[in-house]
Amino acid sequence: MAQIRIASKISHLSYAIRDIVAAAEKVQKKGKKIYWLNIGDPNRFDFRPPQHVLDAIGGALKGGKYTGYAPSQGEPLLREEIAKKEGVGVESTFVTNGLSEGIDFIFAALLEAGDNILMPRPAYPLYVTKSKVLGCVENYYECGPEWVPDVGDMRRKVNGKTRAIVVINPNNPTGALYPQKVLQEIGNLAAEHDIPVIADEIYDRLVFEGKCANMRDVVGKDVKLISGNGMSKNYFYPGARVGYLALHGQGMEPLEEALVKLTNARLSVNWEMQFGLLAAMQGSMDYLGQGVEKLKKRGALLHKMLNEAPGISCTKPQAAFYAFPKVELGGRWKDDFAFVHGLLEETGVLCVPGSAFGAKKEEGYVRLVFLPQEEELQEALMLMQKYVSNGGKCKSLKLP
Ligand SMILES: Cc1ncc(COP(=O)(O)O)c(C=O)c1O
Image (cartoon, rainbow, N blue to C red):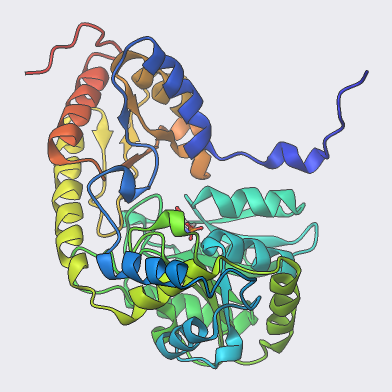
């Protein structure tokens, strides 16, 4: 019998951050220790959600009151809290199964085949993948020094089929934090062309110095703005799968109606978990200070050690838990994939090729996560330094 037929759009679905795990598991089976610098899950390391969040979820479960479908657009108390924080009406807020589902909904509502979304290069891969699945054309704006968006390039890339501009601040995969002035310029461009901005601000509290400027505080009502946030990163609870969208600006009613339909069609988000996000948003953020301090130290360590290695350069991460260094491939490695797989086989250090985020393969970028504790991180970075210095060889490497 023939094999079941799969729609061609599935061929566009890939998620290198997880896909690469299969390769790592093979190496692990051979007895090698793996340094998991590939995935941004703080719970794999020494970061935990605050206790009051766990208590709120536990309390909601114990009462047995929330075992039915939740309201499709979200628990009303949570929507109220989101509305207050975002400065919009409750009807402009939507609770989703992680921000990932929010991105899905926005793309479903805005995009026809042949359209494009302006995305940063490099960008979190979900945006690229989802737009390709919908038959959209790739359209990237470049990011300049310190990985800050080049608004001039953005301006050049806007065309008649551009349906939104994605701004990820703080940024995954680069760890960049954007200056307010740049956000204002993006807002001006969006207003001029009347193109919505999707502001992905899921890391906005994980900032090492100063504060993250939220797009909603920077742009006026003349900008159609979709803000996205959630429980996964700021509250160290990605497994909760709760995120949200908030719509700002004028002329957003059709999107509001589309989101009502899309959320109705998928019924609801886990009700108990929504009480977790409510408690997170209402509760103390004291726990965060320690977490951010750890991240800042680890980011600085990574920055120092990578720049010490000949043939690697890396901008200093300002926020979140990612860095995006460049490796001089110099004929030793064909591309970023060859580098990443070689590094994994030789040292057990697992990172993600930059091309998974839209960088060009030959440029030699990789994404690293600096969530592991200092000792582990230092060991991984030492291995990486030696691997690069030895031109891709370090089987006999002994750590001090
Ligand atoms: C920039 C960015 N946006 C969205 C997401 C998805 O978030 P969630 O866990 O809320 O689906 C991630 C996850 O890593 C991310 O890095």
